[in-house]
Image (cartoon, rainbow, N blue to C red; front, side, top):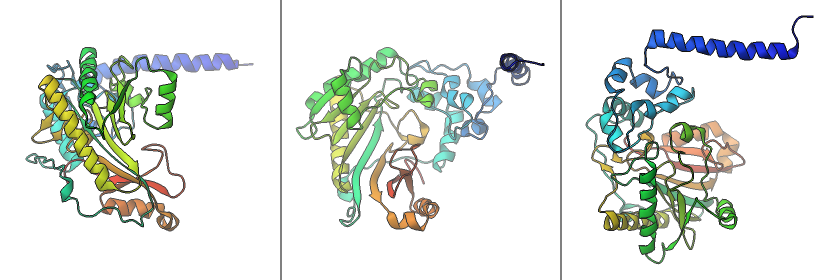
Length: 355
């Protein structure tokens, strides 16, 4: 009687494959070589027009051989992107400026004439988290990129290894309170790996966005983690950015965490300069260069884990709205996509650049 289950499934499989083959022909007919952008409501869909594509599609950056097609791969592949674009090197922001400039200006709320200024002087911070605020821990991180090397989406294998070698040398000259050990992901033994997992320090492969963006090529070579003896100062090497420099500790002494961060950034920068003669990528307009344009400027995320039982009982939605008014970003303590449990929140600065 009719078709069997296997036959029906087979028809669906064959039919979908046929439809996609035909769809690609229609794409070529109607779009030419202009890629279909799956994230139709993304900033990429708005700012990568066919005219811009035709003008920029054949440009290859000098530092890492990056292209506009590689930059916008996530927006083309996924239908859930808000921004949807990454830079493969500092050149990308310059060579593909007709796309990046208006996109960055819209995302960060800045004008075409805006210029970023950096200030890491802890003496200018007024006060601290009050002693009665139930803060569990504080963490501040920044990203940094070394000039002359590609950013994670475009960095070549030899450049990635070069960044790691610079950091292996850099950590040897840290002052006593920052001194510690570097743990390369390549060849990491199980005892070390498990300890880093237990400390919530280890970054791992498998993120779909990072994979499609090109950031997990040659995994795990050229990647690693440094932390000081007290586990209050960390550096991630060659994850989403060349360097993620992190200061953290239990309690709510944000000033102290920021002061250590500033000291650590200077120690890294001075050592890299001494070893290679290179500086961090610092753009007059966009500040510190990162692979994701949403992190441009300070590249900083300062956060605390804090209990807010009153707000939780009152209204989580109203808490989110209040945080928006205060230029803050609330998350669950499981991270950006981990959801919210209980009444403990991760509260951080919302902006990186602009406003």
